[in-house]
Length: 191
Image 1: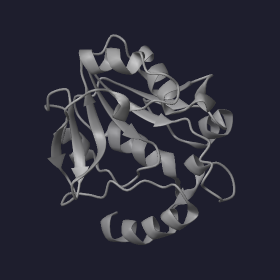
Image 2 (image 1 turned 180 degrees about the vertical axis):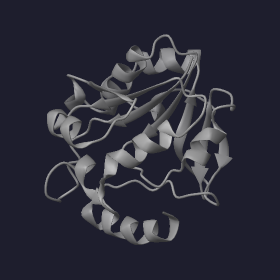
Image 3 (image 1 turned 135 degrees about the vertical axis):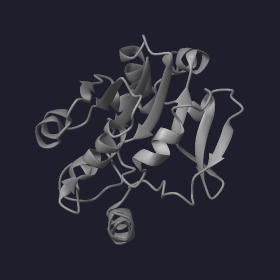
């Protein structure tokens, strides 16, 4: 099985908007819904899991998840490693997982689809900077399942194969309300 995994559990502590960051409106839809729809539009993803944590009930009520499965990580406050570990455990039957983030709404289905056939250990780059999607296979899934709460994939000893995607879309994520406002202007040109 090839699966999609979207991490959307954090509190967004740097985001000073009204309400949870994942629900911040971007052109009439919650921010998280863009990441969910992008993965849903990719042929070949047999299952999509969205890891929630902070404000999970509010997010679950407001976001259209379609066929994607929202799951709640009880230890989300421990860090991204805890959320990643939870998502990987939900997808233990997968032989390959494409990982994206819930606060990166401009990553297109076409870019995600590009990674369905890439080998594990491959990740997108945007103007040379590592980004998402990230392709996890058996070894990386085991490593992710063993992460400590505040660790991330950056802490895994892995030589990543980078695929430049900056000419195809933006891999920017939203950390602050200023990021969201800049993205609203950028999205007008893309969406």
